[in-house]
Length: 171
Image 1 (cartoon, rainbow, N blue to C red):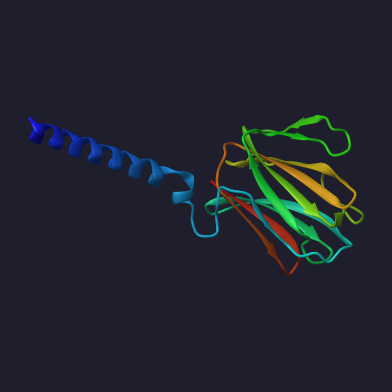
Image 2: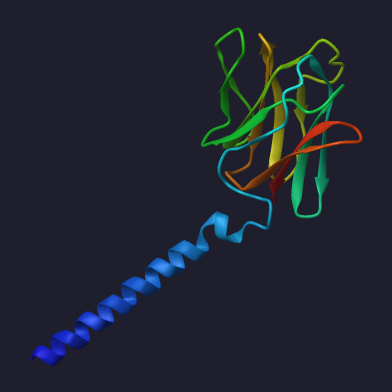
């Protein structure tokens, strides 16, 4: 009788370990290519006095891209995923709902909109990045909301030539 319970215990243990391994390996972070993650990301460098100048959205192989160009080095930034495509407008405090079911909240510190000539709202029709909207700028912070079709992993990075913050969302 004791050996039967030992076999049952071993079978239960094997089933639990197998299930746990399947759950861990199936998560989005496990499937993300190098450089992509599903947690908040930050970077940039403080130089002060830089202005966003324009934005651009594009589709690339395997990801949708949103880029914010600056007239100097990319300022400190944070990109924070959220479970909805609703953001708070800068200044108004009112909800701003974008296309999609999830979002990325982008904040750049030490930046302004003094030289900005780009659009305030970009509706893409892409598979993952559905809309990007300027939430506003106030006291050295510029914020954008990105509406996504679904929560997915992304990569945020500062690039040069020209200076820009590039956010790639897996498709």
